[in-house]
Image (tube, rainbow, N blue to C red; front, side):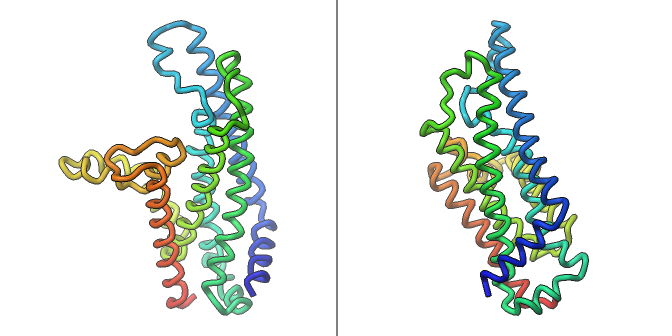
Length: 259
């Protein structure tokens, strides 16, 4: 049943125009930002202006893949959410349940299908982004190794993060069941809420190390998060717990609630 469900979910996903366009968009946005970062870094360093030079990030894979981290992950969140909410919008969820009566299998199948897509897009986007960054950074990027141990770590950590983001998004989508609401919750959480809570007097400094998406970023960049009682490995475990708990809640709601 699981294999058939996965096959059905893949067929539904691959048959939509939005799947192809959003996949291309993820890659293009990743390349565009890598190009800007590489060109900008070279221009700033060539200028020999101390003020400009202080704005240049470390020339490494982490800087090169920021386009995927900033924009690609947002598109993945949107697509993973739509994988669920679109079925409710067009009332096809009942047909899906009739074909696969065991509802947890439906949720797991959706997660596996787009999770694997996200992993593939992550690897392709990040590796090629490093190539783009390196080519436009000129001599400053000459020491960057596309397949070095440090670069490989960035590719793997980013892919793991993309997979877990899909797990979280699918869970939230099953809880909310409405596209705009589910997407707004995750994106506002990621882009706004985690920064805002640090501004709360006294409370902010005590909880800044416990922000899920900030912990995910710390894992990718291999930097210990200020205020967190763990290192980078603890950061990804912490984010994974958030993702799995939300997914479990989403599945539980899906099982108990009428379609």
